[in-house]
Image (cartoon, rainbow, N blue to C red; front, side, top):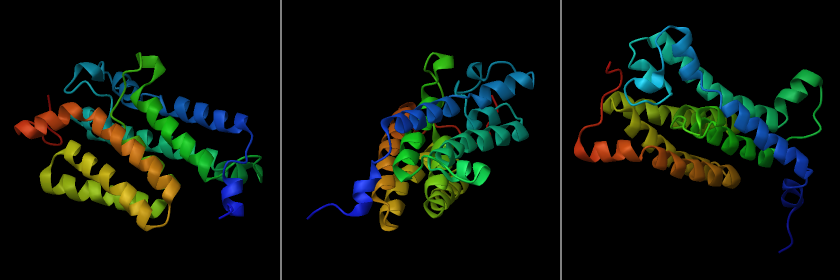
Amino acid sequence: MPPSPDQLELWSQPVVFYLAAGILGYLLGSIPFGLLFTRMAGLGDIRAIGSGNIGATNVLRTGNRPLALATLICDSGKGALAVLIANGLLPTLILGGSPWGGTDMAVIAAIASFAGHVFPVWLNFNGGKGVATFLGTMLALNWMAGLAACATWAAVAALTRISSLAALIAAAMTPIYLALMGEPLVAAASAILALLIVWTHRANIARLQRGEEPKIGRKT
């Protein structure tokens, strides 16, 4: 069966645009908000606290809830912003038009922003676990699936008080939500990111198996 016009158009943008989407996504994703916010608040290096992670869950272990919330919003927001720029929505709103954009470019930006958060060049490629950035990209790629993923995380976290378990279940469910909504490309991308989240949580999984995983909000 010959490809449809939509399939022919899917990868029709110049290669330089895909490279730009990837570079932009990576640079946005690599901003270590948790580290920056804790240093500005005089709390020292977040990497020396708790799990050593730069994400919102570890920032919460300092006891500073507003700072943890700010980290959560910014870590998810940078992923969403990368996607919105790459799919052409923000350039269109701001400039009245965009020479680029599309789901394929948005997916590249989503994966790149996640990679930037997990492997930031500024921190010797040793960053966070990527959950907030993952949720932000999903909200921007498909807001219904993104909300479903956030709701899954919130429900599991409320029941278990274990952030890592909530993250793993939410990540695993997201490709299913997207597939049911008829988003095969985004579902495939979310499956890749879900596998990476399992990898970044390998130490957490070991602690879960031993029953030693700390609860949300436990201060160091």
